[in-house]
Image (cartoon, rainbow, N blue to C red; front, side, top):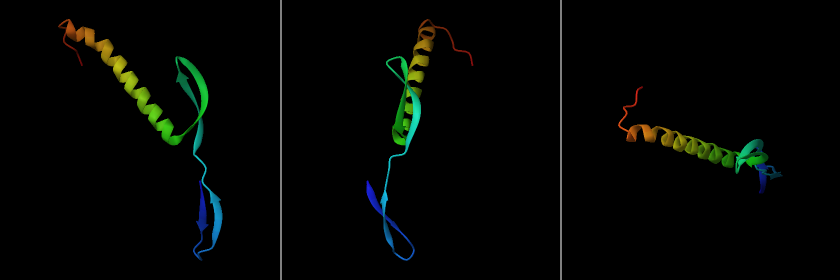
Length: 73
C-alpha cells in the first residue's frame, strides 16, 4: 500500500506502508517450521493454539468426571 507522509506545513512525500512481519516458529501438521507472519496472523495463531490446548485439557478431565469422580481444586 502507499500513501503520503504529511508534514505540519502540508508537504506531501511518498510513503510505502509495508506489512509488520515477524519470523516465528509455527507447528504445521506436527512439524515445526520457520515462517514470517504478520502481527494479525500471529495473534490469530496464538488464539488457535490456546483453543487447541483448552480442548486437549477438556478431553483429559472429561473421563474422570464421567466416572463420577469429583474434581479437587
